[in-house]
Image (cartoon, rainbow, N blue to C red):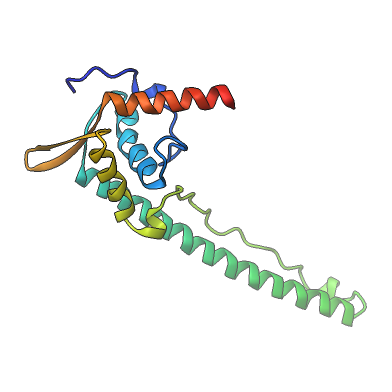
Length: 175
């Protein structure tokens, strides 16, 4: 990048796909965080292509779907366990405690762990949520949009980074 940035990417604090209180709307904040995520990962300022953003959102959506599936599995497993416990206690009471000698107490089996899906508007409003934020950031000059080798690439600008730094410094002073 040819522009001089006010800091290194590591100087900016980002929650996974949100930078709270920086741009006034959830769409802009998520779009900003997604664009900055690649610079943090590369440890230098980089541009982000549309395809990279789509791939990132697709991976997040797949992680969310897996987390939902595991959650459904765990809730069904919990329901079966509670039903088995009620039956176990019923027979214990019915046999005046002798059932304990002949039957094992039900145990809750640990299923697969739930993968933590990031907080994102794409799970509610779809991918258009992020594109709306990108468009708004480009329109107000916070992101620079260039066509490189037939692909649209978004670059953070110095005013974009300066605004995030200023807001985060004010939040640290208040908090």
